[in-house]
Length: 429
Image 1 (tube, one colour):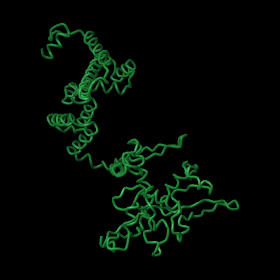
Image 2 (image 1 turned 120 degrees about the vertical axis):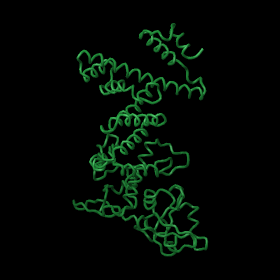
Image 3 (image 1 turned 60 degrees about the vertical axis):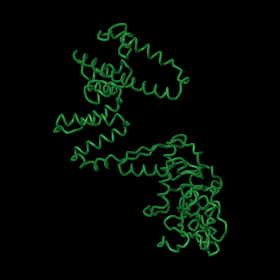
Image 4 (image 1 turned 90 degrees about the horizontal axis):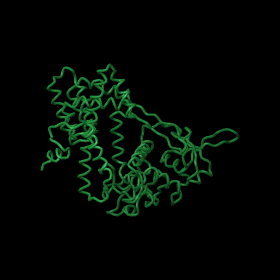
């Protein structure tokens, strides 16, 4: 017995005889009720995967049926003289939905004769796919023929069968831009007008929000930062497999790390006395957990303030005889000492975070302070002449034929340049 015969038997009648709507809905409700009490934990992964796929198709088809029914109901109300907005408002109140949601269902129900509408009705694509295609088709110029628009819709529908909504949206935009090149002339100007960034107020827990509308260039830069530093272990020191941050937390840390690098090494950055001012007492400087404030009012710990400083100059605000004075904190106050101070190590940790040997990912906590210009040859103990090296690569440095050399990088203090054996000048690399 095939599927159609089983369906006919289930209804207790012939297939070509219409079934009362109340009976159809009762059968549907009973089937859903039965499905809801299934113990999914008793099934194997293969059976669960098949079930998830079938339930997804059924849910899509139910959504399409609901949209068609909503559209028919709205049409009946319009025949009675109600406006489209009035019908949507009435149904929204009755169903407990947003008015825009009901509008969307009414419009989708009226598009089920289109290629995307037919695909959505049989569960091949989602309702979101169908809306994206409908919007793209509506954006085509009026001079474009009906056959061309139909082919455009069919091609996008075929693409949607194996693509996520985000990919479909990008593909639709690309195809529309190719068909309507004149529309792209003012595109960049429009994007520049839309760019925005708004820093929200500091919340009670000390966090705040940043809302941005990115231009394509800005998005590309953000994507690059996320690619470089947003993966597990990116922008922080941890053993492989121990990074328990969420993807959102990794994205946050990647952007902050990128911004910190830009503030540290960008030669075009402002050359003022201080980009960020944090007032810290001597007692607070000894306590990494002490809370301090920036000149903009942001509260952070001393440890966070140190990480902000990176390799930039440090300054402290003092009151003397009732007058405020600004003094530089000399991180390199004792260049004649052999061993680096804790504050110098902390600056290098914040600025670079790991061993500076090319390709090495050893974290800062397992690295040593290395004098780029050797201490034995008069190299001072300063941040500019310092670099982080893991014990293995620290041992690479030497005067023998197999020894590596390190050269100070003026553009990025603490991030030295490594010269392999046999290379004496940067131009030889």
